[in-house]
Image 1 (cartoon, rainbow, N blue to C red):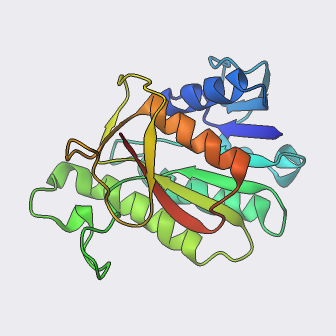
Image 2 (image 1 turned 120 degrees about the vertical axis):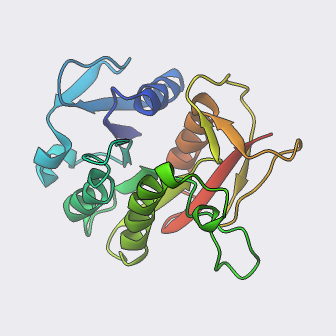
Length: 209
């Protein structure tokens, strides 16, 4: 299996690359500068300069684009739009490192995490950007996409436990009543989905056990 990890130099991207490499998969890092991931192959190119030819031949493309500042978060839905355009009509699957703010917290699926009174105002623009990316994906029947939302507490430095619980559109809590996942365990879940292809054109979610 051939996998391209876009934005492989980021914290999530590096762990996804490592997880896939450790399983013996054929991994190519897509980076803007020097490749700092463990991938032995790299495409050195800005995400928004990628062409369909760059991504031809891959079984899976992972969008690990991350942004945190007001100036950059608009790139989250823009990255999804660009990659969907490149993969439209192909058999290559697109896996998106998503956000948790759009997970539902009611049975009717009308209220999201970001709608809650305790959701920090500082994170609302980021949640909105991720939500827009997911909205775009839901309209694409020409792309084999999967959107993987992390738990609410997405811990960059958290431990790799090797265990997780897969959920769907709703916020799922672990055995301790918490919504938490480490980047390392998230990477396991994402690579599992890359290998299985079990949730094409679906949003799924993951939480620690």
